[in-house]
Structure formats: structure tokens, C-alpha cells
Length: 111
Image (cartoon, rainbow, N blue to C red; front, side, top):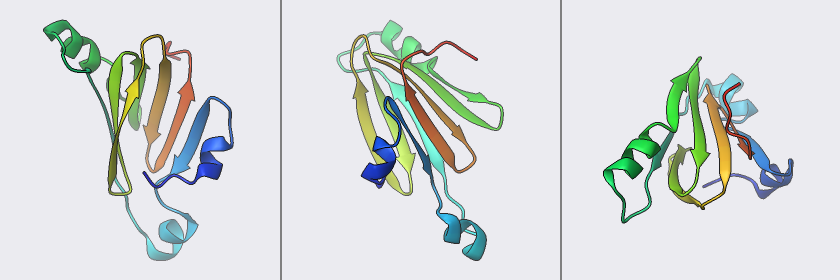
């Protein structure tokens, strides 16, 4: 999806990324869009769809997904779209604010 592997390895159990680099933000004035969503793994029930739809919400100046598997996490960043399965018993919190996205594996309790 365009994330540098070094960024993925910076922090055990998570990652951090900016949709625009320094030059794009300050020299060119670039913009970028990031989107997140959770959808159930098929085959699924109405309850699975309801559970997945409640995982991502607008929060502050961005969005937060509190993911609890099993679910598929959809992430669109820098023009690329990825779907990552979150397996049963896996949890993660993905936060998007402006051009910055962070993911922390584990606890999904609200702040």
C-alpha cells in the first residue's frame, strides 16, 4: 500500500505514516485523502454487518476504527486501497487525523 517497511518496523505492535512527505506538504502544498472502514468477513449475518459498522466512527478532526476480529479492515491511502483481515482474537486501533495515520495493535477501549 506504499508504506515504507522501515516505518512498519519502527514500533512493535503498530505503525505510523503521513500521507504526504515534507516536500509535498510544504513546498508543493499537496493534499491527500485517507479513508478507513470495517466490513464483515463473508459469509456474514445482519449482526456481523451491524458489528462491523460500529467499529469506525468520526472522532475529533478525523476518524478512529476500533477493530475486533473477525473483520476486514479497508484502508485507502495515497491512491491505494488495501483490505486486511483482522483475525478472531486480534484487536487494533487505527486513527486518522489530517494526513497522519497511526495503528496500534491491542487494546480497543476508547480513550
